[in-house]
Amino acid sequence: MTSGLAVAVFGAYGHTGRFVVARLRECGFVPVLSGRDVDKLKALAYESGLEARPASVDDPAALDRAVAGTSAVVNCAGPFATTAAPVIEAALRAGIPYVDVAAEIEANLDTFAHFGERARAAGAVVVPAMAFYGGLGDLLATAALGDWAAADEAHVAYGLSGWHPTAGTRAAGVVSRQRRGGRRVRYAGGRLEYRDDAAPTLEWSFPDPVGARAVIGEFSMADVVTIPSHLAIPEVRTYMTVEAARDLAAAETPGPAPADGSGRSAQTFLVDVVVRAGGRERRAVASGQDIYAVTAPLVVEAVDRILTGRTRTVGVASAGEIFDAADFLRALSPIISVDLRP
Image (cartoon, one colour):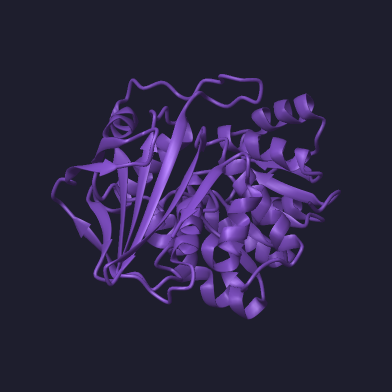
């Protein structure tokens, strides 16, 4: 790991932001705390002994001060429909890489559409959705595809033991639903489709120990943006276990509660990715604990690889396109258990 380099974290005091700050410190980086809530930022700075630089997305000068002298910026502050573009602009002005943890489909589409050409022309690196949703599924699908040039379909099934959403997850979900007019979205026929009908419920056979579970079919997450952004796969479907989907939908479901000294919840996950082409099938499986906590090692591994030149392209790129997917996944062991099956 690259040590001693300063990395700005926007939204550092949020649930995921705190995991990212802790992981950066574990890996030898110096987090610079930033965000919109001055009181929360000061409290975290006092608690951690780190520098705090308040900034809001409607104040470009403050954002410039927040990232000044840093080597990269990680955006953990949603809704990303509001924060992504201003923080990317600050990163481009500073000439530093930008990484975010956006799970919002529309925000990620905006990043690719609005910054693709500019970032490529500047030789800049912008990696959206470098998180459990979007990043991990893309890495798994890319690793599973291997030496295939294309596939007919990709399926990403999420086997969550439950889902206690953060306030940020709920707020982002509200924004996403508003932006798509309450419709659901799927990726089929090589494009995004917006639909008014109900998503199907079906059974998915997860590997042990999860086994066969009822899932919401076409429960679309950021994978429907990241995977097709660079892989020739015209059908990308994502699925969610029914119980986790119900937890997310229920207003009374509490937020995540720490179950160990690191602050992780007791939630477990298994992500089962299947790619199919011409009757052939390949699979990649990942399992671990706490979808929010596991985002931190994904983000920090990405930052380290960017800053040490272990990347494959520039511009706006998803995890599977910019990194060696199989090598990246191996580097996360034992935090995430990965099984690549031919």
